[in-house]
Length: 343
Length: 221
Ligand SMILES: Nc1ncnc2c1ncn2[C@@H]1O[C@H](COP(=O)(O)OP(=O)(O)OP(=O)(O)O)[C@@H](O)[C@H]1O
Ligand SMILES: [Mg+2]
Image (tube, rainbow over all chains, first blue to last red; front, side, top):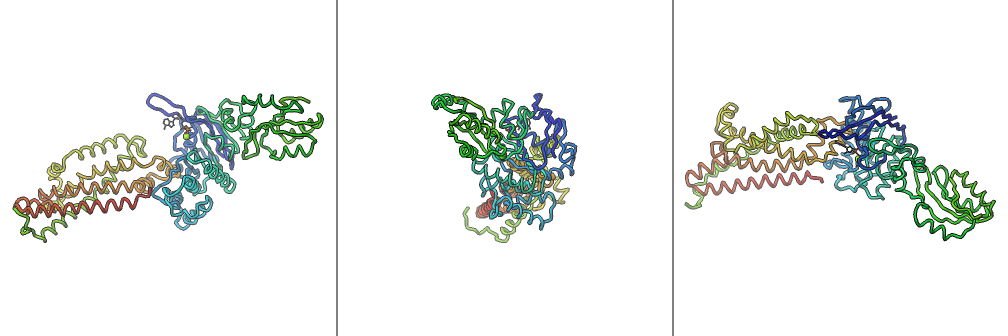
């Protein structure tokens, strides 16, 4: 639904030029939560600001549902902007307005009649869970509540797209999770496409379906979150994935740990890649096969589409039983690698 | 020379107080509107502003700077022909108005510009992202968001204006200043000067109090 084609944005500062977005192409599907991750200065904010034309592109196209947003002027551009909601790191609420007045603001801009406005505001307040705070001013709200107002405001005109630029970066981990849950909830209920800009891997793994990694104004890697996480190709992507889970055997102490383990059976590394695996796999295996399983080390994380991470186990028992257990695990679409074989 | 109150003409004093209020209130109202216009123009045409325009910004800024630099007493004299053309006389409270307004509007315009610059850029950007027109941004973002500062600015300006009315009074505009000068100082009636001072101070306190009260009421931060 959003097609970005050869988009470039060059900032001129005196005689210095900064290429913030560099010939970037990207497709975002209807109804998905698409993450864009990158370090500071990668050009993420510039990219989002180009999508609603807060920034003028130097060249390239941005098609939203077939309309090239870069070609719109005046009233048409303002109308198009009403179909793109945006939430901000620092909320950007009007402090002179109460919760309900802040949420009503985009409706006033869209010239929605007063009666309808009040009805819509109440719906939105219920949707984001702000009942009881209708008459509060932003100064009287917590960060999480302020962002809820921001989200309600962004959704007021029923946009097709929601842009979120570091919307949880100013919040504590607990509140971050609540806001992320709210975004997923909204995505499910309204089917709205959400573009999430972040520098935190945690945000991507928790709510995104697909992810693009941005560096120096370019997208260096993209795909389903699970694929990018399990099989990062670029150096920068690997660094981001490491943020979440360092493969245990890469850590120095692991060889020591391994040396102290009784030499019997097999030591396996199980690589979970989301899909349909669940946490009960291990107990499943030990019930089905007469083998003993010891967990030696684990680094696991939960993503939107399933469990992800590495598990190191020692399987002890009869050689053929161990092989059957191994195959069973493989069939549960978990990658199995033998680290040490003492059978 | 004693303060025996024999020189005091209560009726004249009331009339003078009324004239001072008249000059102050009308000029404050006009300065409020003109100053906001000047401030908005300075803010919007500034670098990175919604109507970025170096030429207009330069012209408005020069106008503001020049008129702020002219001492008020000289400004009155300078504006005599203009006042005469506009009002048909150079005496009385109405004749003081052009000088009061032209003297104070640039000052208040700068205060307005400062107040507008204090507004979080992100909020203006959020309004743009919602598809707001510039006029909507002016009336629903810029003015409401800076209102407490606009009110405290006009409070400071109105106190300066009360001072200006007294100066204007001394050269024929009426009001407390004129009363203190003609009925008091020139006749060596210092009781008149004294009571005039007290009344002026009370008027200043009144404006300060009302201004602070409104500004506090509006400030929801
Ligand atoms: N208005 C501007 N004028 C000049 N240069 C700019 C402007 N906005 C951004 N840049 C430059 O463009 C590059 C990308 O900036 P951008 O804000 O998009 O990065 P970002 O990925 O959002 O970073 P962060 O994570 O710190 O928010 C940076 O080098 C920045 O200095
Ligand atoms: Mg940014």
